[in-house]
Length: 111
Image (cartoon, rainbow, N blue to C red):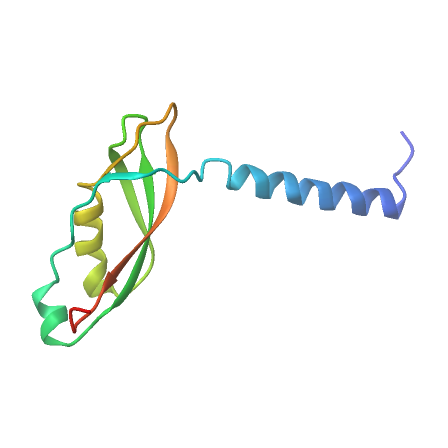
């Protein structure tokens, strides 16, 4: 088999990259939240005036239950409270397992 020319190799590399990117995001589906439980503000975080946003990657089963959460960003004092709350959420049913990114905001001023 003859070696591929440089332009052909470049096109194959770029095509492979986009194929991988498409696969990585294939399970990321927006599903409506049916039941939402608010997080409990951690006492230590409240006393330390720690607030902010926690971003979670949430795995949702076909029946709408949350089976897994992974912290993508946010303060460590707030992350567990966000995960505990989101694990109680229910999403609209769907025919397959999906992943969604969820943001939970903790505002020390209550606004």
